[in-house]
Length: 260
Image (cartoon, rainbow, N blue to C red; front, side, top):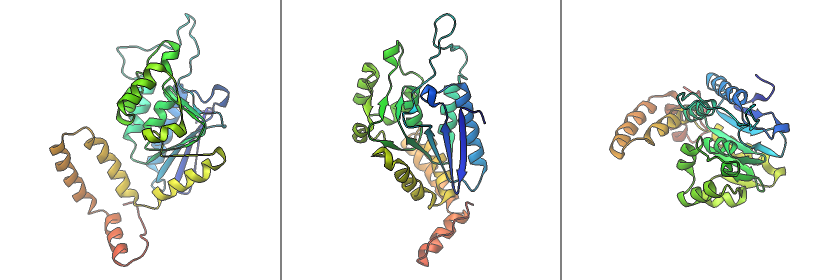
């Protein structure tokens, strides 16, 4: 793994850390590839049941794309005819991830970093962290992160954030459902651990299949969604975790998940 990104696994949780504090954990091609590779490794390990994404230090979760200027003064080069830009690839990989993704927002999440936050399933943030798409401040618009923003941010709030480029605090983001919890900085780890434990104590098989199903159902018509949901529920009921969960409930004991 590149020096600007690291990951470690403790128990059932893999923590992925963007390790570029000197660049406010800005996103570049190397970081995007590292996150995607870590997701691959986590999904291949049956002992991993949740993933935490965070940034190094206490200033920024991710302050957006790395705006190092090219020789002609352009901040980056994108080939309009090539849909394989690293940001698009990363967001596709995060959306396809069958493990729960929890953002540990240790500082500002701006522009592309705000997109990373929205690409996660759940988020715990420090109260004073600034969140939002700030691209209009530098002559752009938050194009690459719009697919995620449109699914999460209420429309009028989204328009105000995108048009003004003005971020809001994580505390103010709670009513907009942008984060699940906000806490003082010194309580961030404890709250994140608390949330993750509530996930990892539940069925890993049901969650993996459920996340996969949710991604499909979100794009379906109502009738197709019901048909697909019935099909998936029938398949889930035949898993070892489903049998164990029902047996444990009947026997009034804690289930022992196998992940199968």
